Image (cartoon, rainbow, N blue to C red; front, side, top):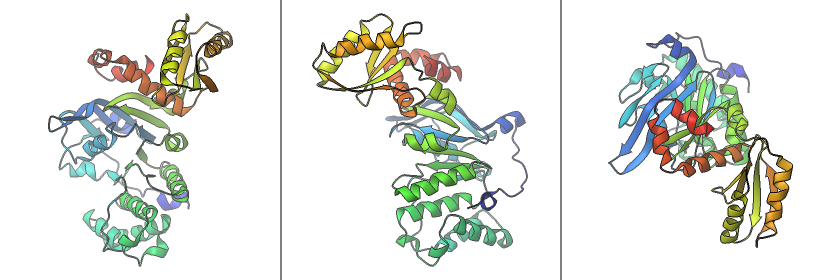
Length: 361
């Protein structure tokens, strides 16, 4: 695969009401909210900025609101409140000019099984209004680039999950959009197909802005330059991967303990009684310990470990999680939950600063 295959062809620049925003931001949302049937809060006062030219990872547990956010950007759903922009243009239902700027890959795409790959891509090209002299070479190049040249005679219904995802990727590129939004692109793929997809994201990221929504931490770590972490419909962190990893410095330790939950909780209580030390249990059951700046980390860790002998638990592992994406992610989720009702106060502070204040608390 060469970058020549996926290089965007010269085209007229994206024109937006505010050119400075267009140059710096591919996506911007302000207080974006979606409530379904007055029963489910899917997106909660979301403030998001995706830099142009970035590979942006939208990370969060299942049910965090990632897919709902993408559907709002695509104009598939109407927001309950707030607004969203793509390259400075407002998103919304029937915003065809905005939709043409986006190549979308849904999770496990459902494609017309009776059609063959070239037929399907040709249909999409016609819907984009592409003339034959552009459409035909492009779809042929895309089929070859995603490794489906040998399957062009097969009906799509005979495709494996990996082959279907590859065709969905080609479909998202048929209009040569400057922005790609891919929702869980590696879901259900075998290791070979997953590696192909991640390599493809890196390649395409040279010439496009890409938003990759996933709950797979290793995918984010491998391909993304920027990341946003969603939890319960809110953006609890947004920034570069470097900024995210800097959050977890050497004064944070992760303890893997074996024992009953009550004994583990008793240990956490004892650790919290130490001056300059705070401990909590992560959603995965690890004990996260933070030592205040200015204290000797080795001395405090020795004192903390000595407390293990006073409880009915066994120490399995001690991990200093500097620059570990998983540890930062778990820490962000725990901090958001620990804020409790204070989250309402933090949010009421308003504006984009709320996201950064939450993430730095």
